[in-house]
Length: 320
Ligand SMILES: C[S@@+](CC[C@H](N)C(=O)[O-])C[C@H]1O[C@@H](n2cnc3c(N)ncnc32)[C@H](O)[C@@H]1O
Image 1 (tube, protein in one colour):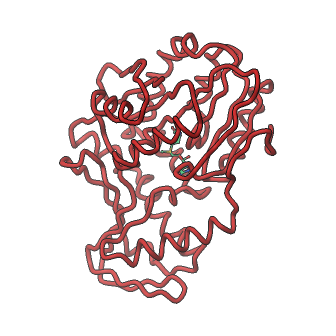
Image 2: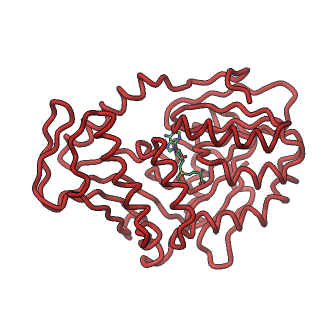
Image 3: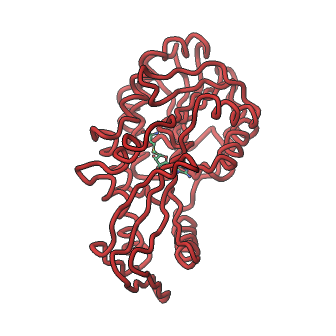
């Protein structure tokens, strides 16, 4: 595995990460409507909890995307061609990647990019073990910022891979911006991207409210992270997880709701919560194939193919 690259990138400096985390948390929790960005869910514990969410019966997204990928990877391999270079944004456990790597014709390079450092390195170690001929160059970075990865001489097409409906965590205008930055900065030939489809409220809300409470633990882990990394005093038992579908905005929102009027501190900063007041922690936007295509087109991509499952729960698009 190649950790020091032939590839140029803006890797994260861990001191900057904790300064940035502190700054973002103080700003987000001091605002009249309290918010935290969802990228902060992913410390090592958060990444592991997300992996467990993917296995819950309610979370149809992962199983459906796996099914779709299994049925379309041969076609993708035909289109992308041999010796491809794959860059994956928000690679997590790199499990879906395996389906792609197994189907592609002699893939050469794999560059997983993730903000969750230890988890990324563990996942890539396991992948390197199973794909010894593949040149793997993990990058610990925040893909919502600038990311330039120089192309290598002599490789085939560059394929960006962005599964998991992570694009849905961005507001539509931010998503267009991200899609257009990936086109201009990363100069990919193809972009394979998974997005979740609009459906009825019940299926959506239960996907983010699993009966075993893993999504709740994932959401509340953010307060634990603030306690341990920023010297916070949140009493986790006095907050609850909530996920609700906002139909007008076509997004599932995750919130951490205060169970009573209370005060918490982060270092010197004192934060008051009214009973029922929430911290908005995540948006998961849902699209139709047409609305997603419009967004991709606005960003400069062309929708080459789109695949969905029988029940029209989820979609995987290949942009060119
Ligand atoms: C919804 S999970 C998807 C994981 C995996 N791709 C899948 O399909 O199951 C989002 C992933 O993106 C990573 N992530 C979230 N925000 C990020 C950011 N701004 N920069 C880099 N990685 C990020 C998380 O650490 C996590 O691994």
